[in-house]
Length: 175
Image 1 (cartoon, rainbow, N blue to C red):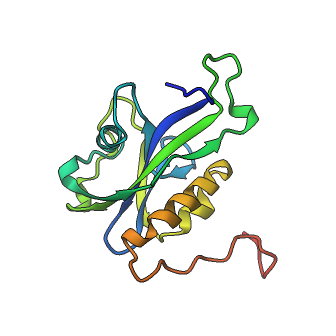
Image 2: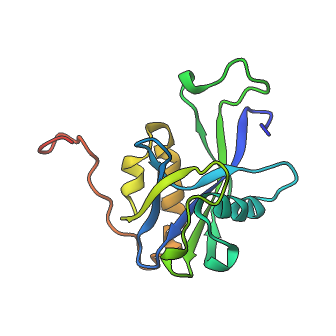
């Protein structure tokens, strides 16, 4: 399902451990890490898509998490030109996402990455809150930053942790 502007409706999932860290998963067979996310099917609400994707990608049910909130509106990112499938109709130029902040309400051993016939991830770990902004693929960074910024008050009522300095900022050694 692609909207009239070329964006695929999607949900993004930020899962916290209750100590301010977030769930970070590695795409199967790649050295690419990201938050769980997935498309919204026709006649499916964002919340229904959230729980379907959570079950398929992470093996968690609605009873395993507490929904803390979601972004007020859609956050969009465009795909780089080389990733746009020009022959596909309708043409998809990117994704528009509603992001959800969840808190794990069960033992982390409940996480199971092979619940679906085609698993999305092969590894996961807890990371510091802002780390995903620096580590995700470049074209998703702005959306990750906006989602984490908007949703931070849900888990950090006194203000989020300080952001790390950007990598390669000219101060000291580069990564």
